[in-house]
Length: 400
Image 1 (cartoon, helix red, strand yellow):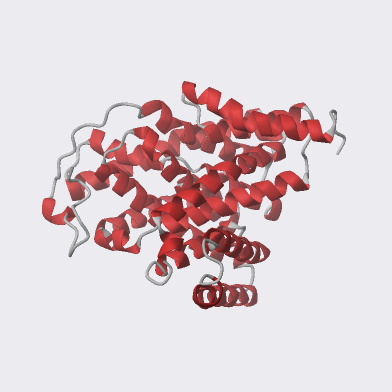
Image 2 (image 1 turned 30 degrees about the vertical axis):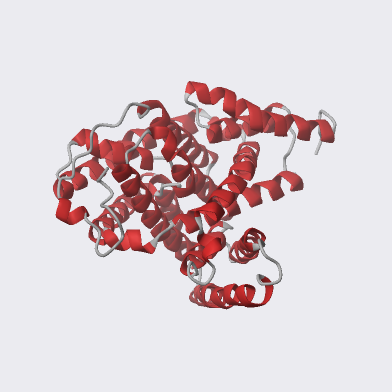
């Protein structure tokens, strides 16, 4: 690899840097993920190390798998069902924005429909795991957290489905085979969970965490071989765990979700670090900076405006109240980084486009921490009947 410094020392520098420098810079409201990408850029471009490094790749894989396992565990279908009408409208708006971006990229950048669709997903798909991890620092009230969480999760589910079909649509046979494998995975996992509950757990207590992580790694590897990266398989495992809350209450308990979150929190810096290492000088050229600036100037106002107008119409919120829901959903860092890898490796996307998307994601990920560290306003229910959940699900999310 042409290391300028000894291998052991370079790993020590990377690990110490990843676990100290981001914490130091957080006092200046710079998200730790952004700092990790910057460290990767410095190591890769500045010192020429860690390129194609298998150790960093393995650690980064653990990070992205744990992040999407956590996102799947956090999804509660009952919450999505409670606000299904508003959520479905929000998804429709996001689909419209992606379609609009696809037309723009085909006409102005000359992209094919598949890479244009992937680029559209990179612009408008929230990074749910990252967003959920940052909610506490934004001082949102209970209702705002509910809407940010449910809208981000539902949008990401649709984005994952679109990503899968887009990548696999090279031919009808490949798509059919991939759908069959993915469907088999979804159908097989419940039997695996039941077998674990009946044959292993009674004789090996407290192995739920290891089981979840191993299952996520195996399923993530399967979906990676299909060409849709690791995130789909690990997300499916998280969703399956939610279905087994009664048979295996521990796998979807608050304690387990917290444990997976800590696991992801430890390893995900290596994913962002590897992304930074893989970037090239061409990704920060003048053309890339202009591309990123144009994407920011167009996509960010569109995303915020559509969220604000939708919430004004259906919930009667003011623009400021709507921004407190729309702004935390801006980060696309993880999803954008994954898609830029696919665009670069499978579609030969130009360094300017890849760099523009990276710059776009780094800036939109930093915006909430800079703009939202203010005390939340008093939340008033615009429509108590709409927000009251049915049955015994507890208080409406807007009630204190």
